[in-house]
Length: 311
Image (cartoon, rainbow, N blue to C red):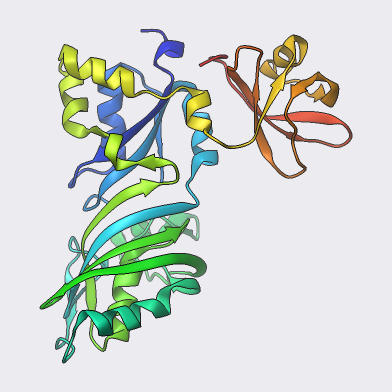
C-alpha cells in the first residue's frame, strides 16, 4: 500500500492497560506504516477515544486537539494515591464522608463547573525544567505541579454507592479528571482517586464508531475482514478537518500552496480566511493541499503543506 493510500485519521477505542504509544504501534503493524502519531494522550488505565494520525495526517494532529472532551469516570473515596488514579501507590487514607448521597455530591460537584484553577497531577506529561513531570517523579526529583486555568463545562453525577462516585464530565483542553477526583474528594471532607476513566468523545470524534484494539491486532495478523474494517474507518485529510474553516483555490493557487509558496487572495475561488484563523486550502477536487493563514497584505501563507496532496 502506498503512503498516500494509507494516509488519514483513525479513531481508536483504546483498551485499558495500553499506553497511547502502544496503540500507535498497533496501527504501525496493521498498516505497515512507520509515520503514526496521536492527539490527546490517554493514561494506561483509561479507555476510549484516541485520535491517531497516519502518514501526512500526523501534520493535522496539533490542529485537531479537541477543545471539548467528554469522560465517564468513577472516583473512589477514602484512599489517595501518588498518581491520583488506581495505578498509583497508596499515600493516604481517610474516613468516608458521613451521610453521603447523590444530592450532596451534586451540590459539591457544581463548584467545579466553569473556569477554575487546577493543580496538575505530579505524574503527568507536562514539562518543567526540560523534562516531563512523570520523568522527574520517577527519578525521585522534587516535583511542584503547575496550577493552570482550565474549563469544566458540565459534571453529571450518575450515581453514589458506598465509596464510589460515578460521573460524566465535559471539559476543555488541559483539564485533568484525576485532579478533579482529588479535589472533589477533598471538598467532600476526605481523600480520593480516580478508579476508572473512559473518554467517550473528543471534539467531533465519538467512541461509538471507533476501531477496537482487537481489530487492530487482527488486522496486523493478516485477518482480511479486520483489515477491511480498518481501511473503511480511515478518514481522509479533508474528512478529518471536518467543519473547520476551508478555502477553495484555483489551479494555480493550489499548485503554489502545495509547493509551500504564499498565494494572493485573488487565487481563492471560494471561502475566506479571517486574520488569526488557520484554514484548510482545497483544490478544485476538494482535496486538502495545505493549511493556510492570512499573512501580511492580501496573501495566504502556508502553515503546513501536504506531500500526499489530495489525501
